[in-house]
Length: 384
Image 1 (tube, helix red, strand yellow):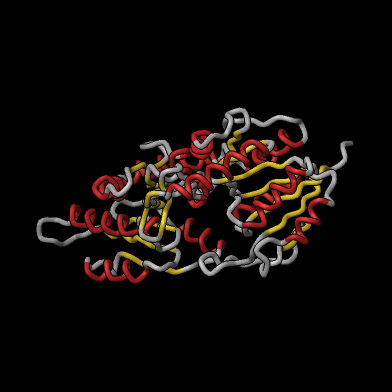
Image 2: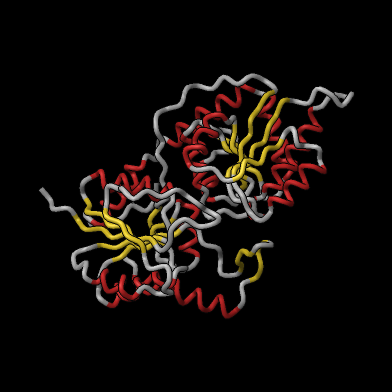
């Protein structure tokens, strides 16, 4: 019987999709897993944490820019393989440099990176300065040269890292992972009553203003000539953020207070319950490096109305079969798509079945097997 391989995973923070994968890695039995996180819950993502986990875990010293004690400790993991998620925390970048110098094998894990030309700010995309482009290009070139493999979130992410210079033989499709659970009961929605759901921070990049505008336009289109008989439609947004005030004002101006609910931040079990109650997920992001909620929705049998700049939408949603895809900021297209689901219950049921079927192609064990194929068998599968 093969001895368990020591695997040390460094990541910025615990999130539900990290925990699903870590629990599966620990349960598989092939790895002796240690997880090191850089920080606990944040103001924007106040996930509840738990002390008891089926694997070893610890926290970097949050007072230090670079936790040198942690890095020294990592070097004592003589027979370990390492996975480093992100380079944006100084301790993570320093750890990769020290591991490379010591000849220790590490995998680099990233969601879909932006191109060298632009970066996202609070107000939207802006041109990346020459100095920033040079610094970023050098860091990425070093990572691509020294990492044993580069894990990227889906084909969308692999295409992006290869465009930035990652050798194709090193890039591996490795999306985020969710617990797909049991197959949900079939949906048989009635015509005219729909519960649309949006999940994410209330910030410009997420495009919630597009969703609200599309809802308003759809309701106007579906009212009869007297202005009455609007469909019984609700849009519920779960999350919080700096643009909440703007969305609240928009809801008031458009007289949508009976149709739009801002629920604030909810913990994962509450989000899961909201998905069970929803008819469709609306995800109109102007840029989304992946979008775990898309996978959670599809696992729950909830079709997705998502933008073409959301990694998980591009990877998982087949337009018209398991959901709908709309161009970024295309209010008219999204309004039309929402209207189709209000009008056609059979279409909604078909999309629901197809969404779940797609989710079933990506159980978390597939992620575990990918890590095993790289670390234990010496190669990595590139395409899903």
